[in-house]
Length: 266
Ligand SMILES: [Zn+2]
Ligand SMILES: [Zn+2]
Image (cartoon, rainbow, N blue to C red; front, side, top):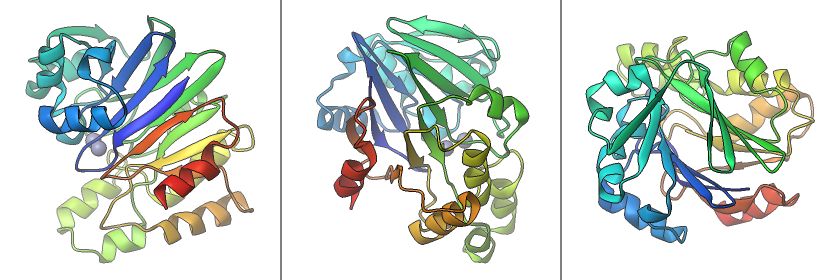
């Protein structure tokens, strides 16, 4: 099982998971041309994708889904609510699921997990293959018991550390946007994300990719501080997904995952 990213953050997202002959793209928030450029950097074309999984209709996750899916005839999985939104109604073929359904895409078993976020019917995903479980969790305003239960036992996580509360509140966003981001239907702050790691037993996790980091309202220093203060010890199993490049292919069976990835992103 392998994992890569085309980019991560409020200007565009796309995460790739590959196992055996199955290769899925989770979200596509880039133009068709930019998506093809970024896929090529990972050695892929749109024709290599088995499916696109959409988490919700916000532009940074869904603006490129329709054109990519039509261009390469890729089926698109999403919740019924997401399909009802204008941004996701123009795909090549829509395959809709109910909240918390589990379904297979070739070698991958996919579970959708409903999350609190200010979209029509937003979800995130836990994928399993080769005896490994990978959780993708961004764009969630608050952690619910349901989410903690769904992400227990993950070997790897791609987890949002969106903002630092202090930086958000003293930063340049207008008051209404600050409120939206910080609300229970907005995005996770560093403390919430670090608390979540504690709740899902971070000792069992083999790696965490820190994702959807706000360029304006966060910093690596603040994230590192929240991790150490919350977990009570140095946490060294993580690395960062960037807006401009995401991250290159990593094998999820590689124990050296995070140190090598840090070097790539340094
Ligand atoms: Zn987003
Ligand atoms: Zn969103």
